[in-house]
Amino acid sequence: DAKTTQPNSMESNEEEPVHLPCNHSTISGTDYIHWYRQLPSQGPEYVIHGLTSNVNNRMASLAIAEDRKSSTLILHRATLRDAAVYYCIVLIYGGSQGNLIFGKGTKLSVKP
Amino acid sequence: DGGITQSPKYLFRKEGQNVTLSCEQNLNHDAMYWYRQDPGQGLRLIYYSQIVNDFQKGDIAEGYSVSREKKESFPLTVTSAQKNPTAFYLCASSTRGLGNTGELFFGEGSRLTVL
Image 1 (cartoon, each protein chain N blue to C red):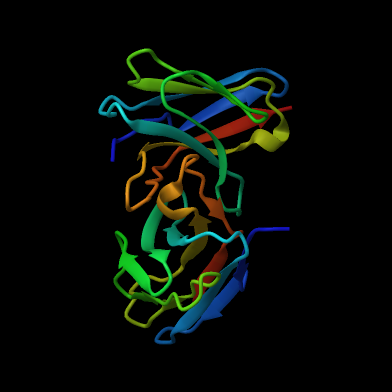
Image 2: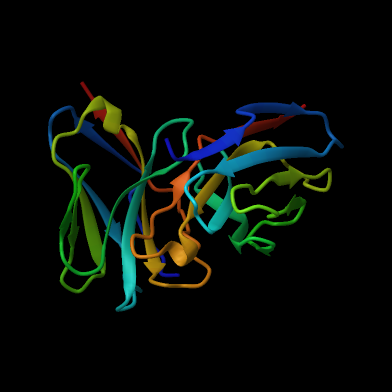
């Protein structure tokens, strides 16, 4: 699996946009980029995923660099409930193991 | 509502005792997983199962055992051979091979403390 690099922590103010970066320089052409987040004392939840094009859903947007070596998760207006650890994961599509490897992620703090 | 149910939420165990954590899903998913999380760390895979009556070891299977007799259930036993069992245990499920979305569905976790 391709390795990912994320900052350990980030801070944001409530109602401001947040850009969470992720580097995945060893990504292969068919590997998908996934983002999960984990609220305190809960299991992770799926946020978004993408391959090449930028993606939007009700939770966030995913901007993928043209060379695919990096991506950015965008929360358009941070709320206090967005304070969580955000994991960037690269997954080989259709891989038989189906194992998502979770690193330490980025701990996002949101200030009121 | 469909989802994954883990029980118990909190569990205390004396050293040398085996303990079994329950995981049940009603999402009709073929694949199920057990992860372990230590404070401030990411998740590490213990075991996973892609289909009933079949399972594979993950990265840290030593001291753990699982069974997959039913599609809905994937219990994890933490045995006395696990040297440092105090942790947060997470069960997850997905369509087999993670399908098109690659979405894992997680339970709320079981926190095991060894006294």
